[in-house]
Structures are given as structure tokens and as C-alpha cells.
Amino acid sequence: MAASNTTNWAVNDGCVSVEAVDSNHNRNSFSHTRVYDVTAGSYTFYAVAQNYVETNGTGTASIYGSLTVEFIPQGQSLVGFTGISQAGVDVRTGPAVVGQVTIDPATSGKVIVHFDGVCISSPGDRIILAASNTTNWAVNDGCVSVEAVDSNHNGNSFSHTRVYDVTAGSYTFYAVAQNYVETNGTGTASIYGSLTAEFIPDDTNSINEIGNNQYDIYPNPTNNFLNINGLNQNAILTIYSVSGKTIKKVVADKPETNLDISSLEKGVYFINIFSDNKHNIVKFIKK
Image (cartoon, rainbow, N blue to C red; front, side):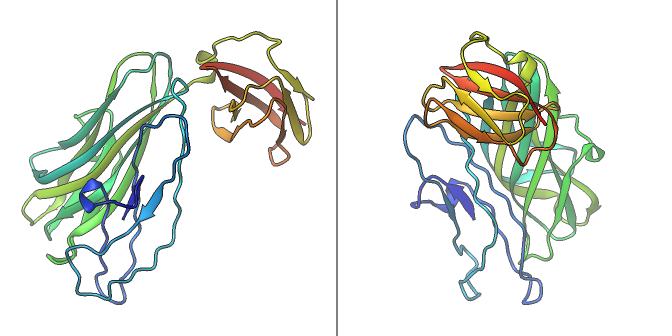
């Protein structure tokens, strides 16, 4: 299974895989992430699935989940991505690095690192996998683990996420794997997937002042709606909590936009207006 930008997808373009052990153990969780560069325009993305290599079953599957596409404008945040295709990696002698990405944020913020894919291993081995900010990683630093049921059911999908605080500078993040505790197998693993690092700037450090009178925002404080006048077409409006959590994101389609904030709890929030590669952040109060 895979997230893809085309229906002419091939299994070597990146995927995760699952197998049913038997008729009573026939469901698996999965996660797959891809990052694509785009220019202005319309794009369609697909969730695709295929029966591959092992075809002794019915050839049908029931799939329940979600497909999410997040657009990140250039200049608003920074994303590093690499596909991972590592066959027969020695993971017994210590943490093995199977992928890495480097990003260079110009200000402080947080980096969300995702490592997901499929791990094929031998029975008798427990394989630990993790997204990490260091190659000197230890299994107690956070991880997920997989095990092969037998030689015919030896592939497991996985997903692991870590969040790191950073300041301005260059940072490298790693996808690591290690054979741990249960070591009766070969001590090798084949890992196919992706490593993604997304930088989210701190509100207080990402402001590029445009001018206090650039936008007319009212009423403030407000109960249910926040009106914003003076917007450029396709301005991106993002509401954050005081802790920096993204609450809501919309794209303005006209100069005056009316935001429904009735579902927000009472308190202080920030709205980031991103337009013409500039940020303008305004505080407002939900009564």
C-alpha cells in the first residue's frame, strides 16, 4: 500500500506491505508517507494497493483508514525527505542507520520526524526501529518493534514519530534499526520506507512584520466569528494556541474572510496570516 501522486504507481516507487497470518489473524495497521515538490496548480493524490509476490489468497482486501494531504508553502516551514530501500542490513552489532535527512532552519522551532515503512526480518529476531536525532541512539530513547511470525510471514509495517526542539542551524535526523533482546534469527533486516523531517517555526521568531494596519481584524475579543479584511488572494490563515499547536488552517479566497471559531475553548490564540512570503501574527481572545 502507498500514498502516491500517480495511479501509474509501481511497488518499487515506495510502499508498505502487510500479510495475514491466517483467517483469524488477518488484519494489520499501516502508515505510509511521501513528500512531493509542487508549483502552483491543481494536484490529485491517491491511496493505492496491490497484491504482490505472494498471491495464494483471494486477491481481495478491505481497507479502512484515511488519506491526508498537507500543503506547506515555501518559506512557511522546511521539509526534508528521503526514501529508504535497504536490503539485508546488519542490525545486530548496534544501531544501524538506514536513512538520514538534513535541514537548515533559520530560526528556532520544532522538528517533527517521521520514520515509517515495512521491515522484513527473520523469525527469532526482534527488530527495533526509530526516528532519531543521533546515531548514538539507545532502544530506551523511544522506538517501535516488529517480529516475524515465521519465514512466510516476515514483513511488518511500522511508524515512529519524534519531536525535537531546535534553534537556528543545521540538523541531521536518522532512521535507525537494531536487533534487540530476541536474537535467534540472522541478525539482518530489509527496510523499505521513508524518513521525513518537518520544521515548524516558533510564532515569536517567525514574524516578518508587514505593518500594524495591513489587516482589519474584528471583533477582538470575539465569541463565534473573526472577520479579516484586506487579504490577498490565497493568503493562508493559521490559528495557533498559545502553546504553538495548530488549531485551524484555511486558504482565503476573497479579500474579506469570516472565520468560524465557535468550537474553540475560551482563551488567547494567535492567527498567522501568510501572504507574499511574509508572516503577520495577531493575538485574539475567544470569549
